[in-house]
Image (cartoon, rainbow, N blue to C red; front, side, top):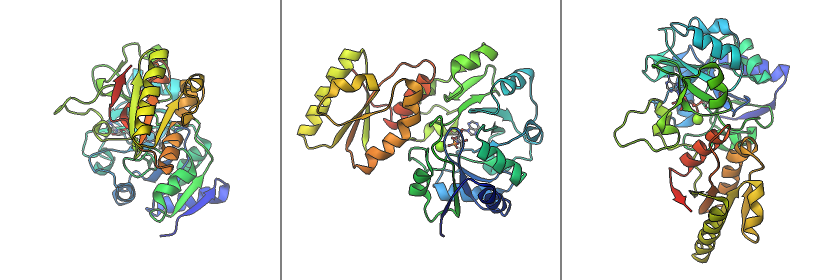
Length: 343
Ligand code: TXA
Ligand code: MG
């Protein structure tokens, strides 16, 4: 299959919408990461997403909608708290988990009795959903286990020859996937942190909590509330180690580890915030920008770039876990498969 890459335009959107209506798979930009879309109400189309990504069948998909009315056929009920969350954060990077109706194909929910729904803020994503006239199921447009794509070039690197069309809308703003908030338990629970932060949600839903699996590995045998949490994710080919502690201690430990690994002939890179870069003079550093928001926006591009340079080891600096820092640390820890060194 030839994979076309077209800039977002009225013509390319309408081509993408007809492909989607015909049961094909199309990659498109959102404000978080690129999505791999298919008609969410067509199980055969959704199956093509799993095939193109090599995604395990037990990992459910998010249904993307452009209007709140589209929610009614997908979910059993919208309680006042869910309504308040939607009013506050939709459209935007917040995915909500509801009890589902039978309209939602089993393949979308991976057999669960719930469905994840999000209303993206990106104008191209909204236009595509409207023009298709259906909810669009879309996971991130990477091959399973690779970092999520934040540019059309990342999508092409993973999907060339596997899908007919990629809509190119430039780099994604947030650069990490949406916050996933489960509304089906006793208290709203963040299963995956993202652009709508814990602190923001707390204003609307004061009892919100963060699932243990966000910053810790799942205990052996424990049931993952979000199936995505049990799969190794966001992983580059290099070994990633997160170095945690006070600034001076982290800098010292990182220098030592870098110098040891380099002596052993291992190609090593340091992934750090802008204000730390001067600590590593003469060593290979990839600077992620200043502050958690900028660092999160550049993280997946950095992991892909370091893979292209065939790194053996990436030493990543831990960050604070407030605001966007929670999403950043969650993705770093998962890229590292929870390999953390306390400096
Ligand atoms: O920002 C995003 O959310 C992007 C863009 C394309 O919208 N999409 C995305 O999809 O990241 P995906 O499939 O890569 O991640 C969806 C996550 C997975 O961890 C999955 O396990 C979880 O949401 N999920 C989906 N449906 C669920 C459900 N019914 N219950 C619990 N977790 C669910
Ligand atoms: Mg994904």
